[in-house]
Image (tube, rainbow, N blue to C red; front, side):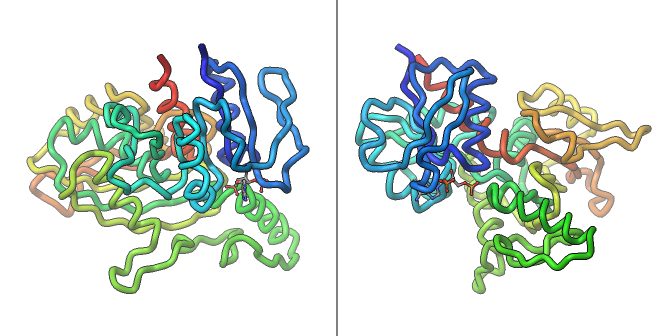
Length: 335
Ligand code: A2P
């Protein structure tokens, strides 16, 4: 029989996309239960031409559920994912709660699908930047071992949730009209601005929480515990796609033709590298579709050894960075 599915956080930025991915991909399910906070109880959402009621999440929400897709923050996942798993559901969790737990697989299907097989009821969906970076890094590592990655991100509002997307829209409108806008979601003015990622900086390392997640999650996903990663994460006034400038240092010199060939053949990657047209990955083009766009492929001029290659990447934070990756994990659990 097809699985009975629940979405926890169905009203959120990612939750809405989970619903859309299940519908668009024709995910075979026998029933769908939409869960959110008590504030949303009584609201409705449409799935396959049927109106479904949104229910308040509770301890009894998982009776009869086979697959639970969680995207309501770490606190909710910590509290309810074990309850869902104990009730017999497989949980695919979009929060950071269990990602670095040794007993929990952290999966990007194009990279480490096999890791899912060892799950004990919970599979973690990685951080959005880690997913969008891993999709092109993995075929490059298969081409030739990677020693080091240096990256800077250009991260969209969606990573901070639906309310942050609304703050970007509202504060941009206010700025254009010359009105004062008082932030309620992010700590800094967002319109026509950018700022270091809103997670706290660890004084011991100098890295913020987002940077730490990406570094450790990339090592776990790619099973490269010694991979050296340096990263700066920045929030930019873009709605829903993250971009990343990456310098990839290989252990040996690599040719750009072999890099391009490896990326063109890679699942989940689309080359957007039109040098004559100056057309490269852009967040607007990455939005609303599932591929990670890759371009600006060139040698790093500061490394004459030919071992370092620079790339510019863009991927939809809500789709491949979150909902789509979770649904792809779930599809591979189907009998
Ligand atoms: P709600 O809309 O009822 O607040 P986002 O990442 O876009 O901010 O979305 C967060 C999601 O998590 C929303 O669906 C939100 O539901 C849900 N959520 C927040 N707090 C709770 C809670 N205490 N119990 C269940 N769902 C919650």
